[in-house]
Amino acid sequence: MPPDTLRLSPEALAAHPPDAGVALPRYDRAALRPAIVHLGLGAFFRAHGALYTEDVLNARGGDWGIVGVSLQRPDQRDRLAPQGGLYTALERGPGGERARVVGNLLEVRVAPEDPAGVVALLASPETRIVSLTVTEKGYCHDPATGRLREDPPDILHDRRAPDAPRTALGFLAAALGRRRAAGMSPFTVLCCDNLPHNGALLRGLVRDFAALFDPDLARWIAATVPFPSTMVDRIVPAMEEGDLAAAQAATGLADFAPVVHEPFRQWVIEDRFADGGRPAWDLAGALLTGDVAPFEHMKLRLLNGAHSALAYLGYLAGHETIVEAVGDPTLSSYLQRLWAEIRPMVPQPPGQDLTAYTDDLLARFNNPAIRHRTWQIAMDGSQKLPQRLLSTVRERLAAGLPITALALAVAAWARYAGGVDEAGRPIDLRDPMAPAFRAALDAAGDDPAARLSTLLGLEPIFGTDLPVHAGFRAAVADAYQRLLTAGARAAAAG
Image (cartoon, rainbow, N blue to C red; front, side, top):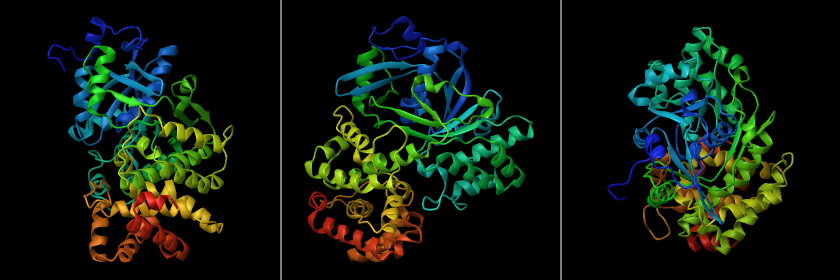
């Protein structure tokens, strides 16, 4: 950027406002209080939940400020602190780009630098909602069963040092314990990650973690703390270098923390909050309901399941992004066959048509303005497969239905988990179970059947039922062999 370019900040924005095409905060930022603390502040929440909150503040004002907490690295804080929490959100669709400056983020904390301070923040009476996007692996659970894993090093640490935690579960338990001891009402815990029944799942994990050192606290959490379930939906690709230039072109100010997102968004929230305290997110288009499950079911299986399948097959076929993958007629045709297997197993939510929903998904995947990398979606597959693909696999097997397209998606994951692409190049495999993959594959040697068998035997992913299901193993083995001999595109051709 030119050396004389001003950096986005409240002062720079006031002195050099952008043109009228850029939306700015219309509320009094000085009135904001740290009412929402968000654990795992990344691009998705800043392009989704924070924007719903921004819309409510613009519509009616209020004090719903947000404090972000990074649980691992200082990067996000270091980008946002010099900007006073301001950042640019760039909406990209086939019709072009729209920019807005978001103002509800008050500060960003870095948990490893001051864990006690983060616990105190969560326990503060001003904190009414603690929301989370820590990715599937951040919950320290067995994705096949949903149960707490007690052996991860950070969980062991948090049991020994509950006042200086490292995990999201540890922070929640410590802060809730402090509020209980003070006779205070609990805050609402709002999970915004792609997990089935995410509110109930997180309640069980926090309760079980607390029970490891304070059974009375565990019972209080189970009986008192609201954990509403949610379904979140918006495609938010990782930031790329060109996004910095786009944000600067829009505002005239340098922004080192912009987010890019598609026009579509959806948020379905179980309306169950401590003392009824929440922003009027329904004014911004969120659906407040008594039952999130049908919407969550639809999204996890039809959108996220398709995303994972396209990520593995697309990456193996040489496609860098989802839009490139769905632009491949072979993979696009495969996607329709995959949806044809999934749709009959998805109960239709109120007001939704599943065929129209998948038609809309295809249009969203085809948005040329969004570069959602297949490698990004392929990350952490061990945590994603159980809810995105394997639940549908189990239901179709129980009903005696074929799983041809689903088996190819599982086989593509196994091929990707092998760590080498079709051209013999190493894959940058990012997965919490990557060491287990390597150990299993090393033990299996070079025999393809043995390598697949050892991967399908990983109980944390496939449970105890699928590894011994002859029909499942045969379908995946057939698809895996086609991937090895013909390649991803030919295998997807059917």
